[in-house]
Image (cartoon, one colour):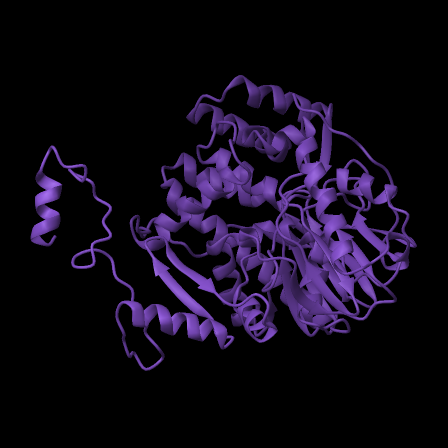
Length: 484
């Protein structure tokens, strides 16, 4: 502080006593510009220079305590368009965002699912993705969702009667029910996991590319009425995608509740292996919820068939100690990833007794990934005292290795151009890094989502490019699943 400010700051009778904010020209904050050459000016000259740059159509970055504020003349397109090109944070309000060029018969409105909802409008071959709208589980969220659709259509002068509307085929979704209320020219239901793969091809503007698609996530309505989430496809955007493999079917006791209680998911994956259950019970006491769920799974009462990789990851988290209800989406899987990351970072080093290789047996046979020997081997290590961190890392490496082997086999057999992965499971950095390395070892190229999120946050853009209802298998049935 300068002598005058310090005297005011230390004087109890002064109104500036211990007042930290200051605008003193001697010791207070100042402003100065820095151009690309690093030249600096102080005081009023800085303000005059910033004002001149704004009048010239330039972008000015104003740095404060909270970071940078980017400013430009909003009435000058030559200033606004460059600013929009460098801003890609939709969750902070920069939307709608252009994500791809796509040929279409007319305007297409693509509605995402009910989780991490967003919508996409295709106009004149340009796909525009809205801001993140959140989960449609409340009336307030639904109102915001419908308002976003109205605003997007109004902004681009599109009539509802011109629209082709694409939506998630699960009839219980609010977004699907909203689609039925629109006076659209045509409606196209789209299977959730095929849409995930479609999004990657759409953003790369590769509609003809023949790919092996791997869609791993928590939930999505399948062709057979089951809950899918561990799927392999072959095909292209123009020809559609054929299901060629999947995770072995498990049972979800209590249906949707298994997503909130990982112990219920564990019961649905081990009910066929009583020896595993007995060995686990001798090692630790399970709460009543697990035993209730196990009884339901064994009797196939109030259960839902599933191929969900997300629920498998929840089950593994419960196996390694996560025995409480989740308080936010993906909590158990994030906990499991952190365990693995600790082992990978060297905090826990693998011993000679428990090497990370060979991997746990996660078998790919006749288009099915069999998780039973994987879980049995993990229980062997757990019972023998191997640290949970090492088991978690070995689990991820085993899953990545087997996905790579299955994808490489399909890639060569189907004469594909690349492998595409999408779905919320691949937000897991430990898994994705291991998968990239494994596919590289097989000499197989990989495409991952770039412009849109890999999870359901990108599901609206996933649905924007389906060419015809014939590319999407028909809905077989709808079920609403309640918890225990």
